Amino acid sequence: MRTTATMKTGIAFVLVIAAQVGQPLAAQDAYDPSPDNLAARAWFQDAKFGLFVHWGIYSVLGAGEWVMQVRGIPADVYEGVAAQFNPVRFDAAAWVSLVKDAGMSYITITAKHHDGFAMFDSAVTDWDIVDRTPYGRDVLAELAEECSRQGIKLFFYYSQLDWHHPDYFPRGQTGQRTGRPDDGDWQNYLHFMDAQLAELLTNYGEVGGIWFDGMWDRPDAEWALEHTYGMIHGLQPATLVGSNHHRDPFPGEDFQMFEKDLPGRNTAGFNEAAVSELPLETAETINRSWGFNLTDADYKSADELIRYLVRAAGADANFLLNVGPMPDGRIQPEFQERLRSVGDWMRTYGRSIRGTRGGPIFGPWGVSTTGNGTVFVHVLEWNGRALAIPSPGIVEEAQLLRDGSAVTVQEVEGGIVLTLPERPEGLVDEVVQLTLAR
Ligand code: H79
Image (cartoon, protein in one colour):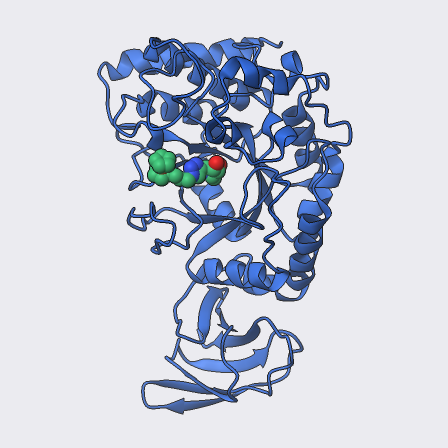
């Protein structure tokens, strides 16, 4: 357990904010992001590609991170799983190197998922990796150190929903079968959550962002978001706050995420929020599971993942691609293979993704991205030689990104026609780089 002076300052800060605000508000009132925060948002949009990591004691059971809920495992029985979590092959350097090989710029890891288990050394509970597992090491601290060494930003996923804490009461749509008493002190739960967040914002260096999830479990509860968001920005103004609550963003949030959908789409069923002006992110799995799942071999191909990354960039969104590491601490080979293949692609095509913004043109053939006076036309679905597209401006030069060869551009009524070479077998994305007149 570590209780540092700074951490106590962090908690004191919450109280100050609470006193200033006086009465509950929906979120951080009159939020005015700091210049550092705005710079961090731009960095985030430039980065475009990150690794999502769902890792917790649930990996031992090999049935995903919802296993406690799905199998109705009581909290006291589930506690036994912690004693079996011993990831002796965890190697932070190997994870971060994999992230770099994949062409990614940040990691978002579960600091605490819905099971309430802290994957870091928390002073406000012993329901954490250091106090309850034979491994006894703070994996987030090791990861934070390695990320800073290798120049990768680290974000923390934090579940507001908690299936273990007795004060998460009244309960919401989930967590009914965990055998907790039917009473609890909600305010106490909020204090606990803020204290853990203060720890994360104090003991792990620069925190890229906090990725909240689970508010949807009790959408109308008094979450006092203004306290929590204000505290986070008070401790680290540049930390990007986002919440997967499936609603329009609240004040105090710095980015908007979409789970298993591109912004504006709703195949998942819960993505009804409007696409906001904030930086966007879309999160997706490689197979069908977030946490390690022994029986899920439904892997997307590297080509499918590349197309998802391209479509996300075209929609002006980052792509947060998930892995669920195994209980021994390794990332399974099927995931590693695919991440490295995407990374190989990024070495040639990364310029058309990183540092770009989405648009301005798209069509049934694909999407486009823009950066530095250049429009990248991503031809995903088109086998013809002639491709008619709306004109993005005055084109000075057009070439294929893969080999620099010239592409003929013809102006026509209402647009331009690109003459493409024959599409090579298996090409995932023909990227045409259009240099525009200033
Ligand atoms: O962490 C991963 C998942 O464990 C978590 N979010 C990702 C990033 C997740 N939780 N739930 N879901 C994903 C699916 C969403 C289910 C919901 Fe509902 C549909 C939430 C609200 C409507 C199911 C039905 C849960 C509550 C009611």
